[in-house]
Image (cartoon, rainbow, N blue to C red):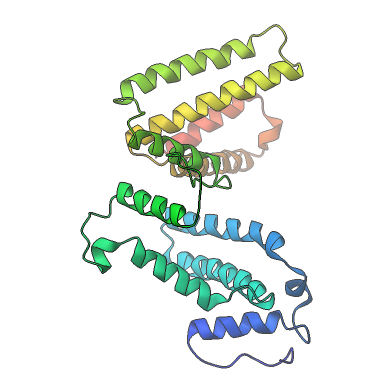
Length: 274
């Protein structure tokens, strides 16, 4: 396909597949697109998934439509590269996920009963792994190591809880959280702080603290990743408001003392109490 030839009209998906084929055409395609491989595109795939979540958090439905398109492009890009190598194509990807959804929803498609609970879903996944020859029989099997660590922590805790390894309620989790805070403080006060060994211990204790915080969020029914996104957005709004106030007063933020900056922070909080 020549580089100047527009893809044919058709359904949105057909047109997108044609666009990607043109971009990857060795004769007349885009040099940047042709240079890419699975590894180089993977970070963009992750980034686009986060941008979908961001649009949802902001309630931006026009933005969500656009970001979903960007995410779909990533699937089409990976599929096109696989097709070029004779591995699989987009149709195989779509058929595979359709088959999986039917297989994992027997209560909908096969009249086999069940309630579609996470437990039923996990049991079907376990049976699939066994059928594929998977030897790992742990309750924690199949949790991807590439997940964001907050999400991975939740999945580990949820799986453990399904076999009964869980605190009975949030009370003991608060106690454990206080214990972990004390252990982190002890590492900050350690006489050898700053040495490689001390930094390793501090990292471990901070990890324990964050893991327990994720567990507390789970007991509260709150997704810690979503909670952190809200906290980040709130901090960003308030910090930008601080900068705006400082600029309006003719003295930039960096020219002020910490006490003055704190006073601006309190003003920003009053304007943004959410």
